[in-house]
Length: 536
Image 1: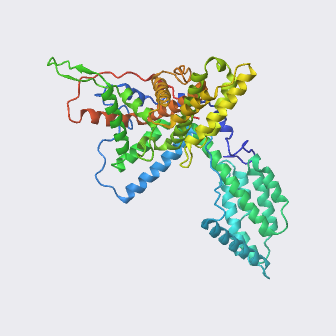
Image 2: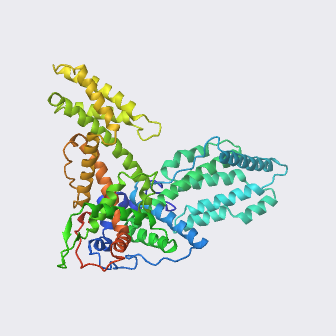
Image 3: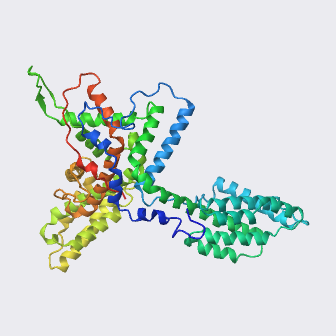
């Protein structure tokens, strides 16, 4: 918080004690997070290990049988705190803004009526002969508490001064004698606001000094600016908390989620279904091997936990939110995952279009980065909004093919190449519009290679530092694809650190609930977990 004689550079960013946080890079965040390594260690243990290195490392497997209303409310509070803390940790741009009610909403109408009634009442009281000060004293008392809330613990001198000037007992005595200097008190309040506000609010405070002599109008403006200052203080506090939350993020989020699981028996139902589906997918793709018991019976090899979990995270890229809710352990990142999925679908459609164009035309347009950028930008703009229910993708792709043919003809003629024959233009349009079909070979090729690329990044140590090259056919979208992949991998790695004990518990149950555990087999390590990067 700001001190008495020294203001923060901006209450909406950080104070001097938080300067190191502003300079903290995404890799610094990683270092603070990776200090808690028991989760990643657990994910590298064999299925038969207990993974119980700390109090919160191993989730409880015996939730209560019944749920009370208090449990539900407590779980809701835990989830709210977990979501807020997670947002502060992963989103460096997170801040609180003044709520803006819709102009014609009932809530805004009621609020306006109540406020108008209060200010009208205040004005009427002050204009009485003799004047009444009941509402004015309530305002002054509220303003005093707000000003005191802005002070840092060591601001004793200014605290004492505010309490002396805004001494409510004295003001009530003055009111009884009709000797209250409301205008003078308002001017003092504005002066104190100028000392406590962030520099970004200096102009707002100066306008208060220039306010008309109407005391009611002046108090209206004082409260408006105080509301802005309160938002600044909230954001200043958020920035101050961020370094501590980052240092303790894994343990904090895991402990909060553990609390939810203990109070809500169904808190891992969707996560269990997600891991079960991923396990079935991995087992289906694994070869059948001879069992080492000498009986000649064939069976499936024990899958790696890393492989199971990574396959599950890859499925999130194409998750159908209308059919299935996200796993509970991913709910705090739902907005980010939905946005990433939308951007990735747009990018895959753009890649499919460009792959068709460059495969059909070949040499005459190869090696022209400026042309490639124009085609990418044109395609991206015309496909913007493709996720809207009323978006006509076939029509948009038809328009794209027409625009691309015009752009290609212009580029070819400028370099003394013949324009595209009409029949080739028709073929291009047909191939481009056909990518709406689910089994279109170009679309399937692009989707398969994009998933392949994401799988490689999930399994590659330090992939955020040195991302591997994109598979063939995706070179034109490499910068955009790499940026998305790194963001996704950072989210996954942080999620693994927090929730690996829960994932391991579920996976062990699925594999060994009806059979004796096989001999321990060390799972492949996932060094990428050790260096997650900031998702922003």
